[in-house]
Length: 111
Image (spheres, rainbow, N blue to C red):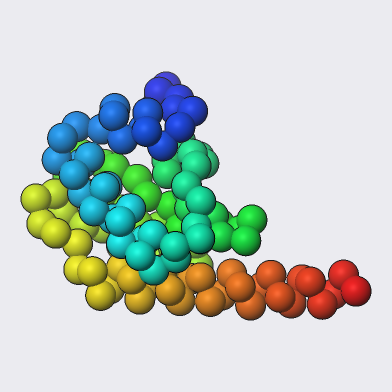
């Protein structure tokens, strides 16, 4: 059974140093593309939410860290290599726009 984490800080602290470094880099890029996103733990990994909807997940594996964009697929980044900032920011920005559009659509349905 996998360990359970209550906070993002606990998740990062438990990650081995190479994964921790890459996760922190990815977190910085996610927050640069979606500054209002809130980080929490979901499904045992880091979850970023925007307007109460899932934006992306970040997770660590043995040889890589991954950015899980809910409908945009999974991007794996090898350890020891800086993630491509442009790619990560573009992916997160696209997800942010999709989340905002879905939230706006849901809001108009409620009226």
